[in-house]
Length: 497
Ligand code: GAP
Image 1 (cartoon, rainbow, N blue to C red):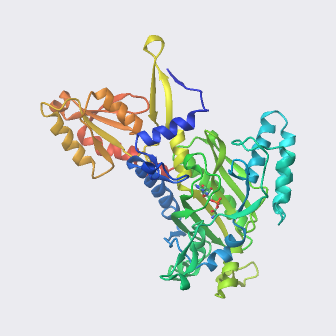
Image 2: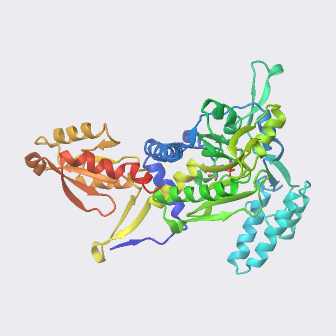
Image 3: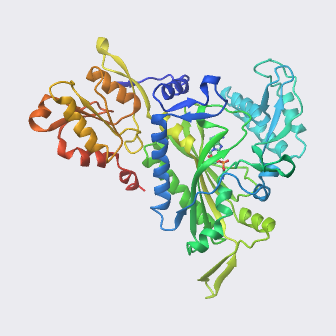
């Protein structure tokens, strides 16, 4: 009987230290004490992340006839960000405590207070506060936000005082200069989203690929935001990766596509092993300047239900703005006939966007996989920690372990290892007691351990130990590739989509 440990308060802490100890995520430049909100992926982390990215990429481009991929540059013409609205309105309201010199997001201080009202059993107070905050944030002048913080008597957790500066808007884009000498250098930005690389290439892809609307363009790439409050490990980072898809459709059909993509994307998360009860939709009440509908797919992280993916109906906002600023037509000619038998003709397509953070998906998958349970009962009870990844995302698919090194067992195990490594990511380990080696693989989330023992030398069979159940079965070496290959294949995920 396995009993799940209940302590969720320390769950994230445990996951962060596990991620470091077993080569998933390291703090960036750690020998210099790290860099806030920047992380590196280790040897197991990069495999897990690559698997997630490949699953997303193939699910988007291979399983949909009308979605193709691109890989646009991080640097773009600065006018791109003017057209998209990021130069003027990609801001967070910021407030400093004069005593601690600490900087906070004014809206997050108020959201924190609203949560406290909720926990104290007075959710109506919290709701009223959030409504007042939403109203204050629409004013150009941010003094209303500051007043709310003063009225609520919110104190800085460091200094304990309410000695606040004015609220100022802070643009989240990182900028740098391009050009050899400072006089002719010009300001450019590190992209804060990958989407704009897709918009500016809409006609390139449409024409070169002879694409007919409706069609989509998918992209995976780095994005950068100077987040003021970075917290919760890799949930909110300054350098992160997005997997975005813009689906170009005829105006008036966008809600149909919005609903279809909403469903498709939720299905994807379930298919890679995230449990249905930990996923939910959250409709946006306050829509971004470009959207006419928006929903988040939230995952229940150890710190609560939070956004993992956004699905936005972005209207023709982006293409129209780019057309306006670049003076290049962003129209599509639709030769299909309308109900009157006339071609739909020229229009700027509407866009439905799906946007998921690769790092947030990684965190959700890691949190879901992290299992710490008590196995056995009474005197025999002991704790067991392992990562129960869906086999298709697990960094290492199988480990080949000779029971002992002598009597030809190590050589036999090496042969198996070399033949399997051409098909999937497999490792070999002959150091220490077999039980310890199983545990090492459990901690890295390897779904299968292949043990080579004396019987192997007689009948060419091995045992496969299953990570989650710890059950063992005897299998012919000749069947390993097919048996494990099928269990870890991405096809198994795609069959559910
Ligand atoms: N193109 C639309 C867009 O960028 P967004 O809601 O700002 O929309 C989309 O971001 C997704 O990118 C989020 O749902 C999240 O998964 C991820 N994301 C955004 N900011 C992030 C950050 N600072 N760190 C990690 N992931 C982030």
